[in-house]
Length: 305
Length: 161
Image (cartoon, rainbow over all chains, first blue to last red; front, side, top):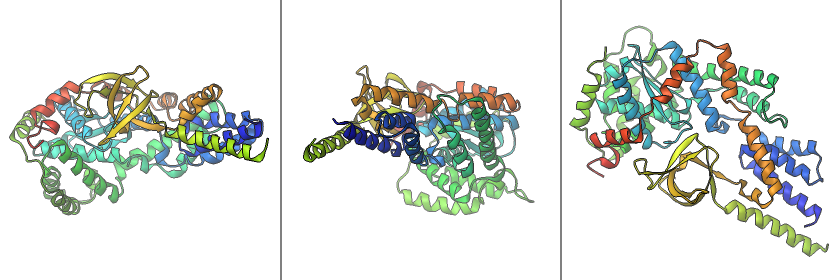
């Protein structure tokens, strides 16, 4: 192969790699282009940097990065709410959630799904990115049976599967982060870069935690999670009425005064109920509620204080 | 070199790129998971795999992929555990391969990672990472999940399946 042909082929390969969305080859690609001797290292970097503009949105966050965002989000939620100290209830919820995750659209996340009951009488459920899912003791008490609790867990898995948490991150933060990460040829972050990226990380966590705990998701994400959750729960073998029963109970027990907690972070139960009914009807044949599940639910929650 | 010969070479190079792109290698993108005998989570585990493992894709069915490990073990894993790897063509040149690997290391070492978490933790004592570590450890075993599903007639253990 002549040098020129080799150069052309190398550039074609390197640029196609960069545009393939694969993040692992940027420096290799730059070196590869430069190694042909036809393009300077600086220009080679520029070619790759141009391609790298593609890594700019939540969709470009890697599984591992999502996991670290999720861990820190979970750590902040657990600074606000303590885990409920009841190993049996936690094991029950964790096992049920894991079973439902098997039948979701995203059963594999970086370090697996984790489910935990929070020690508060507030009624709420939250899904941090990467599969850290929390339900409050107050919510478990509000569930009438296993189908209802499974429906809630399936809804939260829906948020994780659709990466809703990551979509609450301000776009500008990700652009800044990818700029620092994609910068230069160094193998690791130098101390200035580390400080910069940690600052951005804090901002990212602020966006996610505020959305999960204070502000709630955009309505369209809640409706999407309802739909996904219904699908996942029914695929797992649960009767489809779980979420509807729960929403009805929430509507009937709506506290007076300004909305707070679950009522603040979620669209109105009546609104969701109407949609869920339509979606349930569209399912056709679905599994039936089983006494064996209702009985073990009653057993698992009987000591809830 | 005469023009036709050069064109042939360019054509051959482009063709080579496509052939290598078609060679189906997938790479594990999650921390650890299991390769299973059949395409379902309750199937027996045949091998443990981890992030970065390159696997040869043999078949795809209902969201699962059948793969072969470097050691020759064949098994199934869910498609959400892997991503398509188009890096395969780099294997055509040893030098390129080494450079790409270095690039992979560089990027893995530069995202939101353990290093960033440690730095964040140092400045945010209130964030309860110990509770998160405990939560990660409390994962149910595959046998426990299977027993739960069996008892509750869920998944493949349901009446209607």
